[in-house]
Structure formats: C-alpha cells, structure tokens
Image (cartoon, rainbow, N blue to C red; front, side, top):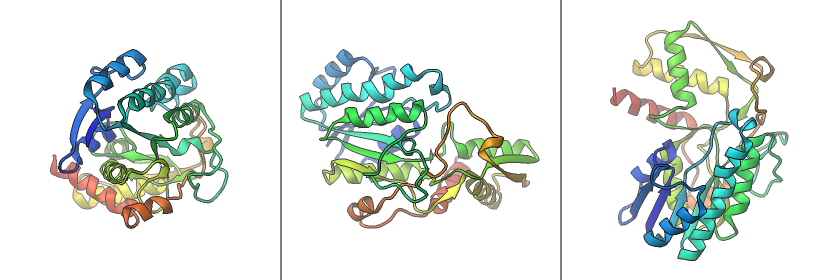
Length: 285
C-alpha cells in the first residue's frame, strides 16, 4: 500500500501516520503541502505520487463558525472531497474518507445504522454530508464521533484545563454520543482499507455517554493518575443553558455491527481508551 494522508497535521492524520502497518508507505500532506480545495493541485499531486489509497483526514471542523462560514466549510468538507475522488479514480487509487455523526438529526432515540436517513441540523453537518456524496460509490466512508487524542484541541484537553483552573465546570448532559480515541479510529481505518471495504461504515469506541458523563470520567481518571490535584464540581446542564450558533444532535450514537464483523469484534469501551490517552499524556509530561 502507498497511502497519501491528507490533514496529516490533525489529530486523526497524526494517528493514521503513527499506526501505519508494516509494509505500508505513507506520504503526509497538510495544507502547506496540498490545498485539497484546489482541484488542479490535487490532480497534479496525486498523479505524480501514484498512491494506492488516499486517506482524507482533512476537514473544516469549526462546527459553530460554520454557521456563518458555510461556503468555507463546504469547500473543504464537500467540494474538495470530489477533487480527491476524481484524482483517485484517475490514478486507480481508493479514496478513504472520514465523516461524522452530525449528518443525523439525533431524533431517532436509538443507534443510527449506516443506511439511516440523514438530516443534518447545521452547516457543518450539511458540508460533511456533501463530502460523503462527493466521495463516490467506490470510496470507503467511515463515520465517527467525538474524536480526541493527547495532542491538539479537543474536549478532553479542554476539560483538563478547566478543571485545573476552576472550582466548578458546567457541562451539557442531554447530548448523547460516544467518545472515540483517534489512535483506535486510525487502526480501524487501516484495517478496513486493507480488507478492501467500500461504502459506508460506522466506527467509534464502544458504549455511550453524555458530555457530562465524559467529563466526570475525565476527572476521575485524571485524579487517579495525578494529572489533576483537586476535584472541581461538575454540574450537569441542559443544552438550552449553553446556547451555541450551531444546533447539535441530541442523540447521535452510531450503530457499528457491520464494522465489528469486519474487524473481528467490538472496539474497547470508550472509558478504557480514555484511560490510555490520559496515561499517554501523563507519560509525556
């Protein structure tokens, strides 16, 4: 396998590069190397590289800002995926694209299977759905949710900072989903690609949580490891008490049985992987 990884500077991009299996050649591309919104640049880059796969981990992820910058979100999350798909087809490569639980409206009250009807609530979700459609029928599209790792900006690191600074932290308790550790997602993407999977698949860690549940677990695990010295009071609040420009799905748990069959079993529970991430953070100082 010769794999071009776009978005290589992000948390998933880094994890994809770090978890490459033996024998796989990887080429990292971030925005300074390749502007995926530039169709001519994408065609030229892919033609010269001649990869067997393109793993697209590049994305516009500012959910709230997308409400006022929908064209910018669509350019990266939608149109650029079409550029990558066209270049992949020309080079005889497979496109592997990463999407999101935000393509659903969160009203079903049960895990969403890959073939469930989509109904994004905001600009970010609409742009990601456009990307799924632009990827084409030969692509592998992996939807995921609530991704975090030991580096970069994410919910876990934000909570650790706030818990270290404040006596009280207020966290939304009525949005339900599943946290996903970026290295686990990256390993799953490699495994699915190696098996030649195409079409839509869902991957997150196992289990479900609210953001409040997630925050409580972060504090408990961080205290046990010594990453936090004192406990903050974590207060559960309703979505309406924390208004944001973008509306978020209230329940966006993804149904993953087809993915588990291909991978040989379910992913570890999200709390297990949270502990792995915090141990990594602790070891790195």
